[in-house]
Image (cartoon, rainbow, N blue to C red; front, top):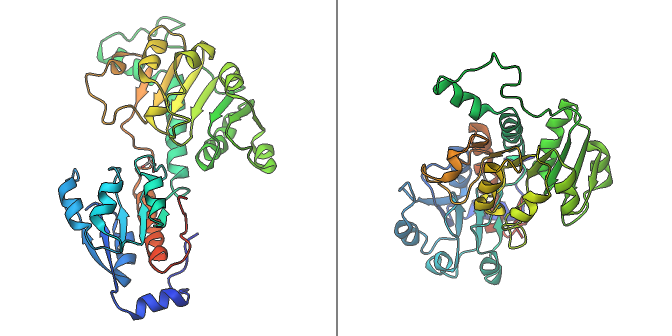
Length: 341
Ligand SMILES: O=C(O)C(=O)CO
């Protein structure tokens, strides 16, 4: 829940009484107004105007600012931090994943860094369930049969898909988003949840979802649906490769709402083409944007979306609000609502 506007503590009051003591860069012209309005109360705002973001404009405008609301997924690195200067004391992204941030570099400079997990859990989880159904019930292939005048429902075994009921759903990563997906799927009469994470989740959460922590190989071997919901790190990059696909059930459906680079996309293409696994539903690809000529798009058994997991009006507004609170708290020398490190 968000702090109430009236409930400022002392250091925030100091910020207030100093007038617009701080200058904050908003690195994207389309950051929802909710966050901008919050920042405006205490801060002078400079805003990048170009879309797609012109790096030169960003580097020019970041100079001398006290805080940054980093609105897009452009690299936040030493170049940008150097351009800002040593007075920079608070940054928040407007995303859950921060793989485009050079976190060690931000840490080294002791600049508090926030991000916006949690508020996007439900929107991303809704989309994940959509992808899971679309991929298991062959939406893309079905639509193509209509376009190609191949509607052959006189066959009784035409376009048969995979059932969700009584299935085992395996989560690679079982944080807020994974749990929100599991919560939604509990209405689909699934049999059980497996998960692979570095740390075990709380016992109550395991009980709530009938979830069991397993090693990666077990997750692959036993899951009917494998859902990737982990951050992209050097440990998770490329782990879904040919070796992994070969350990999955031939009827398995892969869903990725996390980051494209967690999957070796060439290997995924081969696995799908050879029907080594049943299908995939992807909101994220490598690279993004994906070329319209990418070979993945020639396959019937993959549903691809253009990274729209958090793309609802309310979710984006909430993300801007959290990001603005993070920036303001950093400026006031207080802990951020959602610190990234
Ligand atoms: O917040 C994120 O990390 C997303 O990928 C969605 O915008």
